[in-house]
Length: 542
Image (cartoon, rainbow, N blue to C red):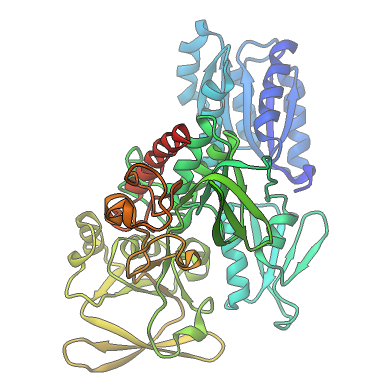
C-alpha cells in the first residue's frame, strides 16, 4: 500500500533521545503496515494532526510523553481524541508519574500507559501495541483510495477474492460491477494497477504479502497453516530451528473462518477466528518463520535422510523433518443442484466474508455441530432471521451444551431438527432450497438466498498417496497406531515411531488430519507444540 494511504502511528516526546528510540522501535515492527511519524512538541503534534485530518488520513495510535513544555501528555491526548476519536492512546511516563497515568485512563479514555524505559521492546512494547492495533483494525473503515474489489456479489470468483482479502485482514471496498464474467472481478490497487480476474497468488504477490525463502535447507517444513501448524512454527522457530510454513490458502485453517471462538482458554469474551489466527501469523513471522501462501504441497519424497516437498509453484523444498498439519476440508453438500451455487448463495464456513450481504436478510445454516452453532449465533446479530437445518433429532447430539443453551434462548434462531436438505434451485444464484422431513418424507420448498454449510470434513491428505500410512478415511496414522516398526517398509531406525511420528522417520503429523486427534482448537495447538519436542529428539538422534 502506498505510504500516503497507510494509517499513521504518531510518537510525541520533547526528549530527542527518547523520540529517536520510540520512532526506531515503531518503524522496526510496523512500517510495513503503518506510516510512523514523530514530533518534538505537543503544539507541533496538534498542527500535524490537523493536517492529517484535512487530508482524510487515518491515525491508528498515538504514543505521547507525559512531561512536556506547554502541554502535558494527558492534555495533548485529550486534544488528539477530539480530532481522531478512534485512535488508540498510549501515555509514556516515568515511574513517578504512574498515579497520574492511572487517573488519566478515565479522564481522557487512555488505552494504556508505558513506563520508561520500555526495553526490551519485544517484551514491554510490542505486545501492548499489537493488541491495541489489532483492536483498532477490527473497526477500521478503509479510505476509498485503498483496495477496491469490483465484481458481482453472487459470483463465485468474486466471493473467493472477498474471502481472500478478508482472511488477510486487508481493508477493501466492494463495489458491484456492471461488466460481464470475462471482465470481472477486478482488484484495483492503491498504486493504480488493476488485476483482472486474478488468481490468489497474483493478488498476494501484488500486495507484497508473499514471502521469500531465506534458507536453502530447512530444519522443519510445516505443511498446513491451521492452529497446529502455526503453534509448531512459533515454537520451532523460537527455539532456533530454521522453519518454513506452507499453506494452500490463507494461514489460519478452518479456525480462521470461525465467526466466534468462545471456549478457548484466555479469551473469556470470545475472539473471532480471523483475529486469533492473524495474531498467530504475526507471532510466527516475528520469530523468523518463512511463510509460503498460497502454495500447495503436491508430493512428498525422500532424498537420503532429507525430506523433499514438491510444491504447486514448481519449487522443491528440502527439510530435515516435515510436520503434516494439513487439517480438514469441508464436506460438500449432497443435494441436487447444490454444486451450481457454491460461492453464489451456498458457502462453506465463509461466515465473516458474507456478513455484510446478509444484513436484514434470512439466513439458512446446515449442520448441527459447534461450527454451525457459532455461525448461527454470529448471523443472528445481523440477519433478519436464522434457520438451522439439522439431521439429528436434537442439537445436543453434536453440539456443546453452552452453544445449545445460547441458541435456544435466541429468538432470532429457529432450529429444524430431523430435516434433510435435498435440493437447491435458482438461475445464476441460489433462490430456493428443498427440505425433506426425516420422519414423514414430506418435501417443502423455501425461499433462500444465503445458505452456509457445516456438515463435517475430510482430511487434506490425498496428495500424500502411499508415502505415509493412513487409515481408511485418509487420516494420518502415527505412533502406536502404526503397529510394529518392523512392518513399516520405510522405517530404518532402531526404535518405534514417536507418538506423533508417521510411518516415515522424520515425518510427523499433528492436528485434525492426524488419526485419533481431538478435533478441538486447544488440542491442535497442543499437538503442534508437542510435535516440536519430538522433532528436537529426532534431530538429536540424526
